[in-house]
View 1: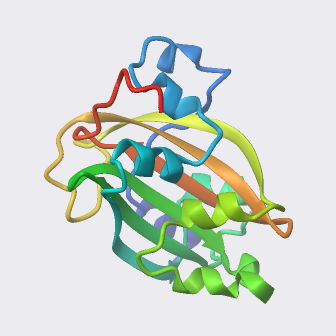
View 2: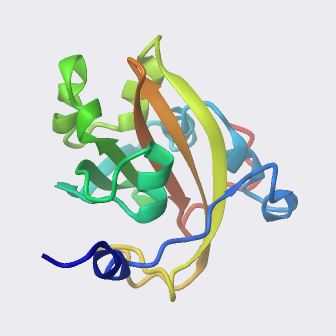
Length: 192
């Protein structure tokens, strides 16, 4: 059986995440500042901005081991499994956001078993319609896609892209949502 150090070294690199208050320079002059720091539903804002021309494309959804920082944030042990869901959020037929959600196996019980079958429905719509949902602090990052590539079909993107991630709790069970804003997303001055 391979040791944990070798297993972790095979994981793809990931961006460096910072609590937004500890790295205010990352968002101080960013044209996407209001999008990065907004605590409301990104899905709702994207639907409004695209005037309803919004859709979700699932890149992949599988059980697997999350990245090291994701495991730590979720309080998971090294080899614990989670549902890893990667999607592209399209507005006006443009790829606007790459989203990666990590749902620990222990979260996928009871009524939350339905999270396994989201298909092309946005996770954000489900989260923000749940009256018992709570959201943790926002972390932000800049991802250089040359050193930390995006998954297919986004691997051709060569840019430094801003993103955010937050822990959410449903029925006191955690899940992590990461959202990276793609170069095609440019509504910098739109207050929605």
